[in-house]
Length: 380
Image (tube, rainbow, N blue to C red; front, side):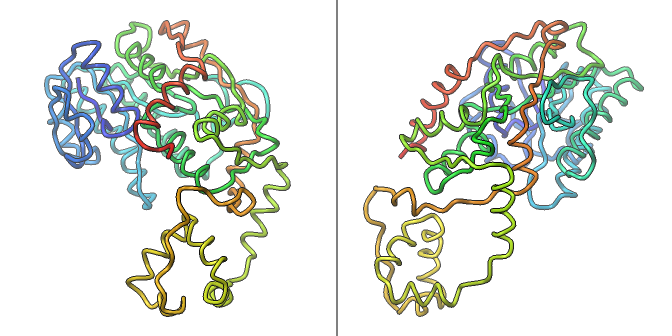
């Protein structure tokens, strides 16, 4: 079996379970060998190459009966992200065609237009165009299904919701980092529906999609057994850290905060003057995440002289600054609207055709996530 995107959060866990549970022979294609460092303990064949290189994908797929495409375009260049999310799909299906293999393609629920309230399934309307991520993922899954139909390649599309669990980035380590260093907005008090799904439930759906006779040519939304709100979801991470750093605001208040942040004047000269003159303020500022960056710059740039020539004092021990002094980061308008939505994603089709049944409640999944976070040193 070939796993594309094995260095990512989902692909990494998929490889683990293929090897440890299914005793499968697994090959992975990664852009850099270091990207597969977590897989080094497993008996997998590692090839280097990029999904945008058709020859590299074709070589990696040789003698494979299933190609799992877990690739998600990353980086600042939108054209490169799109190349991975669209062109990489073409190469995966064409390579599978040559080997008589099945393709299990990972997409996202973001291809749908989530309503303000109600339910979402595979018949829901597509998301409006304009967002590079959802545009590319929608184009990629449509291309996969079209090429599969044209060339007789069994293609299955799996569309997970909000994936969390050990090694998660956006919905794991990044949330913990935000809560450690700042206060987070809870839009409408966090009443929006999160549609969280534990990573192992998604992997189970991928494994079912690789074997089900009823799966080819279909799209499957994959969600968890519950519908936790964002307040409940973020609250789990607060409890891990032993903090309370969420701030309930209305959608209108969050948008107003964003507008004010865009109009904020540049205060660098006044800030530097205050840092020079007020030692207590300087200590508090340098104890923040932004201050840590400034502290690294002090020893290497003229900023040191602007701060009065003195080396910045070390942060005052492990204690965090008072809650009211932590920054409150504004959220972009698209994120504000997204977090306010209460739409519930249904997975009845996956249950009926794949036999998918999510096994991890939010409590179970977060218990395992906390164990990982503690071992990884993310809880302080």
